[in-house]
Length: 196
Image 1 (cartoon, helix red, strand yellow):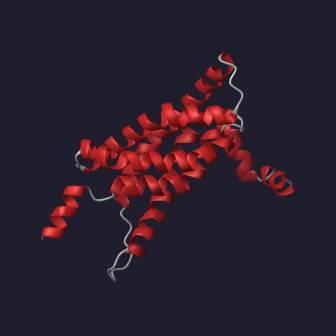
Image 2 (cartoon, helix red, strand yellow):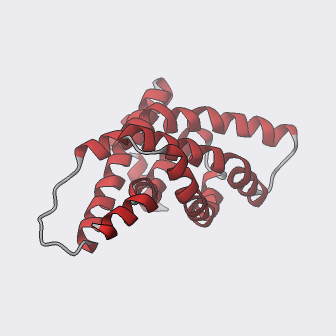
């Protein structure tokens, strides 16, 4: 607890908190984009480590840029407006249980969000969005339920202004799963590669 208090007194944390107060959406967008790049670079390094070739690691900046654009243009604004809306819903229906909040989020909000992400990622790289969604949505939603059910136990107990930051930090891990699912070869590509 003392470490957290000391951290809160540092100039970068105070500047970030001030920016959240004065320019909340641009701050969240910039943070989300930067952290999506971090998670994708980690994913790329893991993919390279698991590859069977001896080529050195080369960062795919275009891939990271597509994911950062998603984070800046959709993810951060979506969460920026979603959490205040959630709070109004929780108050209106007197929902206090974190478990109920998490269940509602993962049941009703996660599938359309992940559908939009997979559709965007396929379109951004010129792939078939229908096939990407069919092949990757079940696995990505399963990943989401397992990961975010635990992470949202923290999310829904934080003040609304810092929830997007918390989710972005947690997404360093989950973003690597999103990147994995968005960049996994589709069944047709695997069949073509095996036949050649």
